[in-house]
Length: 494
Image 1 (cartoon, helix red, strand yellow):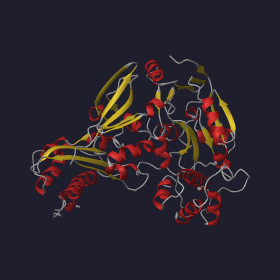
Image 2 (image 1 turned 180 degrees about the vertical axis):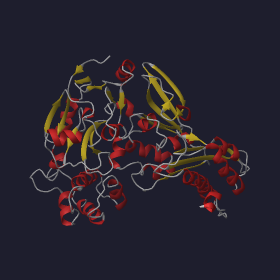
Image 3 (image 1 turned 120 degrees about the vertical axis):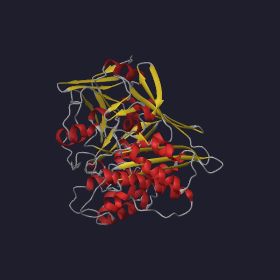
């Protein structure tokens, strides 16, 4: 039971303390900034977290350190802002009123034309400027993945980011640095550990006090919509106009952000964001680095969570295929009761998971690779960055001392109604030599595992041929010798 209750959220907006109550569960930060506060520098473009015109900074204390991250205000709900510091473009100039280093560099290097996307770009580059004193071009490009500009082009914007890096953020040239201690003190005071309940004519918003309070609250309200990063639920509101009330927010719960890294593997709390999980997972599984940097843009990776990607059960989620291939397990909690099961068994059919009413994903455990194991994950999409997968394939194979396949775990997203293992393909490989003839038999066996659908992302034939070709790619990357690739019948008929 929560020790105390509040009926309002409290946070900082630029240099003001805000207290809000009575707002709708689906009120977005963007609408509140523009309509209620008249801070119209932050723009609405796509309303789905894709274009970055709505980018703002949100600061939160994590293990005693105040850190600012870029977020998409268009799909971020106001209810998630308790004990945070929201910073908009209007507050990113210097304490003396002059342009910030990033703003001035954008002017000097002609980084803006129409200007619609510029506030979001400045916000993204400001976050990078604060966090990285000497960014590489790759760092800058990764930071800008979630900011689309169709007028200027990125060359002058990248030059502006590089130029800004020559100025070190300090109390003289940055408001956030100047007010750091004051902000930490204010946010610490606001984070009082209370359960928050916001009632409105449009529904109820809950912020549980802690993990036990969440379990109690969700068991009592199993009809509630769980919101972690809102990168998916936000679109339910902005694109589908769905009623999501009542809402239970998780993003403030430190217990769900815990990570354990051991020789046996990695355990992630369900509230660990993609950004926070990156270092832990890629240090143990470097093969996941390219995939991880293609999950949304930086804003989406800052907001979205690994647990949320699993819990929503999407057949095209990016994280389940590699996690299934690695043999991950998921822990579910209902009240005080916990149970664990292999991740692959969590997905039952399209839109249905092995999750009881009032039960939530608490953590996911990913075992380490055995010495000498082969592992890879590949994402196929129309656009390289910030795009939804047409399919995502993960391969995990171990060989015995004779060079034969001792075990195989292969999983795909986008090929069925759920993320799904390729059992027939695995059976065709197991016990066979790691050689071309075995690969040819295995890729043909994929037609027994999957009957993909055609949609606007890809046709069924394209998905099947691509999945089979990924099997070849995985083999070529692990066998160390070229082979002659035969043309697939479906391609020959095209």
